[in-house]
Amino acid sequence: MREHSSIAGQTARAFEFDSDGQADLLQEILVAWWRSIPNFPVSGNARQWLYRVSLNSALTWQRRECRRHRVIDRAAPFAQLIESTAQPVDPVDRDAINDLYGALRQLRPAERALILLHLDGFSYAEIAHTLGTSANAVGSRLTRVRENLAKLLKGKLHHHERV
Image (cartoon, rainbow, N blue to C red; front, side, top):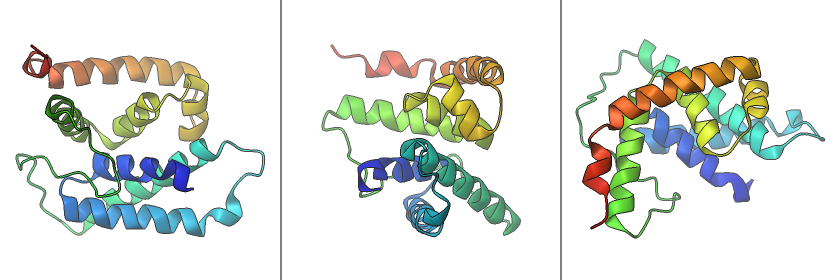
């Protein structure tokens, strides 16, 4: 599980806005990993299984937090990285990653789950299996999500270009 710990950090950062919330969600995800060990498919892909548990935990967390009527200020500055997640040394890269996570947070939860799996290199078939849908649906949804992300990030790419 240690070799895949970045999955939990990336998921928490994509689904929570502030560093305290990210830390709480990270803890929830790690507890969910621990509790679901008996359900681990022996012949399965560990990375894919950990993503499924992480995303399900994040979606459950978000539904629970919405029911608590927690107010989230979407205009707040981007949260700091979770301590366990490595931060790029180059400030340009760091700013670009912060902008990407900021754009991800503006997507619907299902779109965030889809793009996180895609950005981590999962194939359409693996994403479909993890999310319980078809590979064709993954392809068409990813096209729409990429277009939405491009709109959200428009103008920021030029800002991060190296001189």
